[in-house]
Length: 122
Image 1 (cartoon, rainbow, N blue to C red):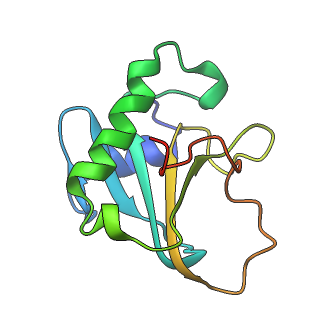
Image 2: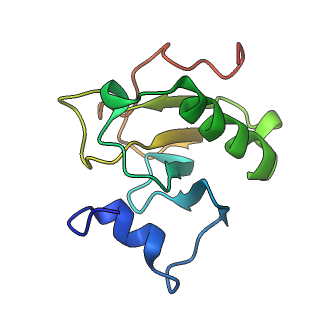
């Protein structure tokens, strides 16, 4: 855990409400949601970003965690799943976005790397 990393701090803080957590991953609600539903799936292990992932099993684990523990994940309509890609990272800790429903007037914000993780093909 990096002490200067916001997501590492959130993961380690027992006072912060998490949607789900296990020994490997944590799911939280995005504090600046871009849509009706906007979740972040974070690995507990600090990984700077998508370009520094050293094992594809980490990415598989994030997706499997979301599928297993987010309510109604498989029936969310207009769902997008993806990762920020440098230089568009707002936080330097790997995190997977799950965005579904009506956008909150922030359509122009570059949230996802379109096509990178198409949940319908996963």
